[in-house]
Length: 440
Length: 83
Image (cartoon, rainbow over all chains, first blue to last red; front, side):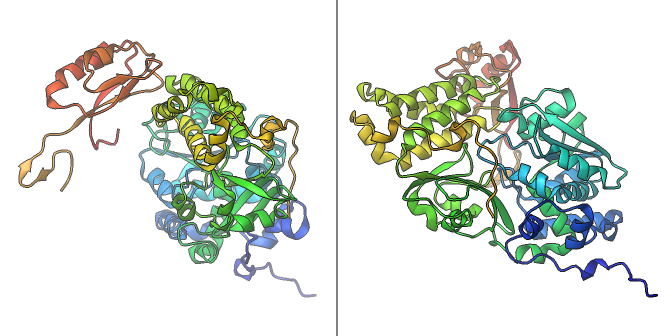
């Protein structure tokens, strides 16, 4: 009887095309078991990066891959890992899957359908920075936390592993808030410096990586930088998990190559249901772009060129029969309520900005010529004055709305608010009870 | 070389000092804007807003503002020190 030899790592073909992180789900429509995961991607084989030289080679590989963080800021992951590795003291790894941004569902989808990539990515990061501890964070009550915990239990590691349930809230998953929570059980942002890479959890150098960033690390460690760059753009290599919502046929999370146009992103979610008015790109703390921006590519450089940003990588299509100003006013009110109420300019500034915007949107501002200049002044005054970037996100949203809906604004100010101003909000955040749906 | 103590045109440049506000600690007492209005404004809610560097002319006043802040929210740092 012949015994089949265990398949060597090299026998596994790396995923091709746009399905990388969610390729298992795309193939089977369900979460894969750990053995299935290993058959698809091969062993993680961290042993090939052993010793200080191996560790340096791993970080160099990540740097060469051009991977940028998927949590919002898009910072180069290789540089972050190198900074943590170089800092004094035993490092800590934190996986951030809280996804406090309500427009985004990609990280919980990843935890549900590809949890092993997240766990492996955290192991890769821990190896790279020499950490002896990893914390995987999701918000309290996150339905896929159980799936992730199951996956964690199947990996053998000498690291101290902790699953953390972080209290809800928009700013609770900001990097310094997570560090603060893991250190002092206080999920509020702290002042910088220090940054997490120099003094994070319990004062130790800390790498905080978004779940999607970690999942990419698990693949880069296996298949290398060149494979990673085979998809995407020079500036934004790889694929993006995009939460597509609003006026599309199949709202949900899709995986697309960076460099795809925003129109192609909408098509991946079944395409627009009708005429579009605008796109909200990068989350509720993101930017409005006119509907013509469907030709713009999803990449850091292309979006920066039109005054927007990738952010958390969500795209929401605003239908023609909605009022962008009213939607923005409601989101601003939400963002104001989500302030941790620590910094004055955020605590007092955001409600003031939201009130000004509401006056413009409802037409109440038409009678008061001071509203628009006051809003402009307040936006300038709030920007960059918090310990975290929460106020800055609200400022970007408001400013991009004033640009994108300029024609509407003129009508509202002339006392002629659009007919849609009184209709139901179109943005999903504003419709309670919306479930998580998937687009394939 | 262009450090805070670097030279430009052969002349030693004195370091540029900046006031930094910790936005969490600031409680809008406003003493800083009284002591060194050349550097600190207050926003409409009374919170400190830095609008320029600390010139040699007002360095003593800036130090006084740091010392006077009831919540210790102000620090004097050298430009380029990474803080």
